[in-house]
Every structure is written in structure tokens, then in C-alpha cells.
Length: 431
Ligand SMILES: Cc1cc2nc3c(=O)[nH]c(=O)nc-3n(C[C@H](O)[C@H](O)[C@H](O)COP(=O)(O)OP(=O)(O)OC[C@H]3O[C@@H](n4cnc5c(N)ncnc54)[C@H](O)[C@@H]3O)c2cc1C
Image (tube, rainbow, N blue to C red; front, side):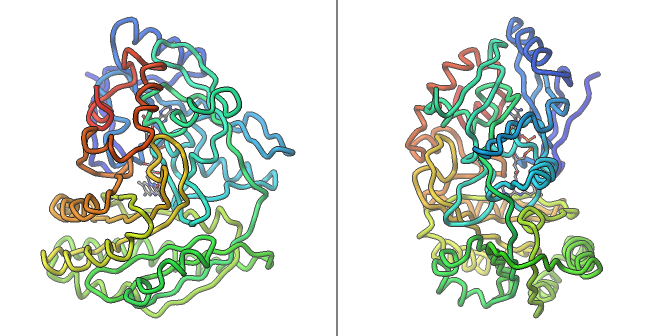
């Protein structure tokens, strides 16, 4: 009897033939070489925070918690070598102790560095790329069990593929990141009418280092967040207010509303009016404390990357579709922005990007709503987040990525035998 594995949201389960936790890179290389010699497959799992079966396998599942921690910090170049299994939370703390920080982050820090970059995890900020744009080098165990070092000066084109790889090129053991001096952010959070946000959305995105908004379905309101760099002294939310706002309201009270809505869906539109409230708050804190929050309420998520200029029409289409189809939604629609980059499988490759994310409370049917949103996103040449629910296949996706074939060549070079394949890679990348 093998052990069962499931992801954070609980929507993906797998029965790996074996679960192994190598102590170091050499042991990991032996595991991969052994599996490859028997024609078996291997998948490394990070923190299991993908909603897609990206890390699921019926082959050998590798946990690389032992390959974590800071390996070295070059303070003059601000390059940091970290074990691939280091969580972003641990990375943030270690960087902070050295007066450094990641230039941008998503809204949680539970992920591993390898898992986050492998699915093109991103935050928000029109001048900043996703986390994988900070990658300057990786070490990985390739499909035959050989350790390969790839860096931006010797093999820049291969690194463009290895930085966002869906785990399909090998098992990452170490990642070199370009980081920045530690900085503080002034956070300003306030509700605005959705129409007003959409009218000035590009100005808002351009005028703030990090701008995002959450439209609350069944209302005309959006919660906006502007985070801007500041030299002002720390002025965090007082501890009690922080607990009330971030833990009690954003997690426990919100979770209660979601549970109520799951039992009595017809109440959802009325419950939704409790969300925007009047609350405006402003505070100053270390960047990493502002970017990432606690997430106790479980949900399912789909997120699409579309050309930034399409964001207004796309959100308006979602609003009209929700009304027309009568979807009852207790979670907001989240909109973020990033700069274009040149990584082969980055969802922002070659274009300035807006990200539109939709969520459904765990235990409620997500399929009808997600399918309707997906149809709108496809109409805007949307690229699905690799770690969030979608229904696209390699045939749909190949034409959306200018460097698609470059990635396939990298895959043929590093894993010709497809040791690192699973059902998901076969679906989205091909055999
Ligand atoms: C509550 C929540 C909030 C989120 N917020 C954001 C957000 O703000 N922005 C955003 O873009 N995404 C967000 N995500 C998605 C999340 O960042 C990605 O799904 C990310 O991949 C999860 O990292 P992980 O460590 O859990 O990786 P996993 O989900 O475990 O794995 C992801 C992929 O990486 C591969 N992988 C992991 N480790 C290695 C390795 N060492 N070598 C090779 N391949 C490896 C796996 O095989 C798999 O293909 C969120 C998810 C959740 C659940």
C-alpha cells in the first residue's frame, strides 16, 4: 500500500509508487538515475500549493525539504544561492537579516523557491517581473541523474527555459537569485467603485509600484491595494488591529461567510455586501511583510495572464457574464499586473501583462464559473497560470508562447527520456 499525496486545496490527489526524501543532491541524483534506469518517472513536490496536478505522480515523489536554506550571499552583487526547497517565508527572513529582499512577491510565502519559479508565480507591479525573473542560475539533476549547472553567463538561453520549467527539465537543487536592498512599503488599502477603477486602471497601475484590486461580485465595489516604496519610518498596523483585520476578518469571519454561502447559496449576494465596507487603512512595513499574508480559508483558483491593455474589457465581460449566468460567488476577482519578460514559459513572456484570478470556496462547484471565465480569457489570448486550474492543452498553448520551441528543445536536451513527466506535463507540454 503506497501513501496518498494531496495538494493544499485538496482538489488533487495522487498515489506515488514511492515517496522519498533525499538528504542531499547526491542522494537525489541516485534516486533519479535509479528511476530512469527502470523507465520510471520522478516528480519533485514543493509545498503542494498548486491547484493543478503539476506535482502529482504515480511514479517516485521526491520531497526536497532537506535541500533548503541559504548557501551563500554575495553582498556586492546581491546574488543569493539558496537550496531549491527553501520556503519563501524562510528566504524572506534570511534576506531581511542581511539587509536584502526579493524585489516583488505574491500574496503568500508558503511556497518553495523551486515550486514558485517553476510555475511562474508572480506578484503585482507594472515595472517588475514574476519571481522567476530574479533567477540567475540553477543546479538541477537532469533526466538521466546527472547534475547540471546552468547560469546566465554561460547558457543564458537554457536558463530562460530552466527558470520556469514545470519541473519538466529536472529536479532543481539550488537556485541563484538576484535580490535587492531591503525596502519598506507604504500600503494603502481602500474600496473604490469598480467603474472608477476600470476607467483609470492603467493610470493606477502605472502610478503605483504595486497596484492590485479585488472586485467583489454582486456589488459595484472593488477593494484596491497600492503599495509604494517609502523611506518613512515603520508604522505597522498595531498588533491587535493587525490580528482583527488580517486573521479575524480576512480569514475567520470571511471563512464563516463562505461557509454560510455554501449552505445557503441564495444568501451570497447579500453576504457580499459585507465585504467592501468602508475600511480604509494605511501602514508602513518591511516589503515582505506587506506582500505576503496568512491564508486560512481554502479555495480553488483559476488565473489567466492577458495582455495588460485588455484588462478593462475582460473584467467588464466577467461582470456581465456573472450577472447573465447567475453565478453565486463569495470570493472576489483579483487583478494584478507585471512587466513583460523573456522567459520561455513565463505567462508574461513578450508582453506587459494583467493577471485575472477567480476563486471558489472549497467544497463548492467551480467548474461552470471557471469554464465561463476561461472562455473570456481565451478571447483575450489568455495564458493560464501553470499552478492554477485550467483546461488548456499543448495544442492550445504552443501558439501563445513565442519561445515554445526553445523550451521543447531544452526538454529534449535535459530530459529526452521524460523521466520528469506526469499527466499534467503530457497534457500541457506534449509527450
Ligand atoms: C493560497 C495560495 C496563494 C497563492 N498565491 C499566489 C500568488 O500570489 N501569485 C502566484 O503567481 N501564484 C500564487 N499561488 C500559486 C503558487 O504560487 C504556485 O502554484 C506554486 O507553484 C506553488 O509552489 P509550491 O512550492 O507549493 O510548488 P508545488 O505546487 O509543490 O509544485 C509546483 C511545480 O513545481 C515543481 N517543483 C517543485 N519543486 C521542484 C524542484 N525542486 N525541482 C523541479 N521541480 C519542482 C513541481 O513538480 C510542480 O510541477 C498561490 C497558491 C495558493 C494555494
